[in-house]
Length: 359
Image (cartoon, rainbow, N blue to C red; front, side, top):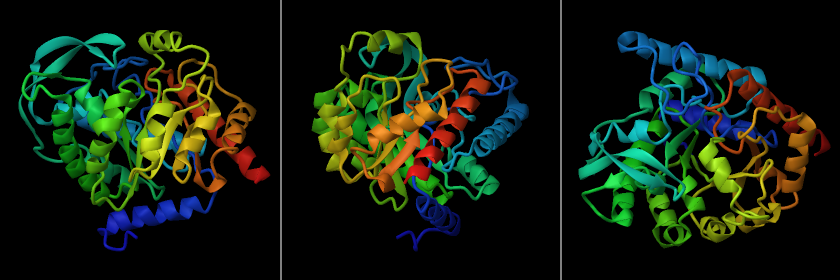
């Protein structure tokens, strides 16, 4: 597998295979805080502080810093930390045709909070690769395996006002084709694991089972690198933490979507476990899949101890084989202070090391 890939991707895929010989390879969900000289800290959709050539250079510098922090912390599967994008969904969408960012509509996101979003005014089109050059740059900076996050089709649909297709399902299928083109460009640039972020999967259960998983499978069609889907309860922002308070003593949302994902072509599933009310036994619904277990809470500034991380991973091992367990964070850490995020990455790696010793 992977023998037909272009040279950079082949090298990257080989590195992933090597990493898997060490059990419990660590990674994180997606974003890390940006340096304060690049964007306003601890803020989602933070405007850039630079422009023109200085912004281009600043983004690459931030990517280098992010990579350095990951390596210092001991992360096994590194990423860009989303340093070159303002937001995990809209930065990709704004490079597509058919979406007008000058027209805005206020709509409810994830059935949770109101947001001003761009409008789909025509057929959506893929102009050129969006992140491939950034991925190639990251590939040139490290021999570690690389994971790259893209928004999933359903979450993209749920972050727009659709005035053209007027069908969430039809728009999702269009986005799936576009995402597949982007994913193939990332694979060719040397990315080893492509992760699709689908927080919408925790909200729209009927749609997930009717067409959400199917459109996700269309997005990964023909890929030879590994694929993942990240499903969490959101960034540690007030709208999300308030929503969690309404979910009761047990959060069983995963129960509605995991059976379908277990039967899907997706290789890995990323989920939230640390300080959550998700019953750990729900992981058993993914039997056979690789599972990125969220062992770091991104909704507070308290840095977990390695022992706390290890305790979460130990509980997960009752429901997933050790060779399929990937310690991870609950979600991205863009809204956190940089030193807190670094401390959490380090704790994740140290906690995973404790479990490795026991194995």
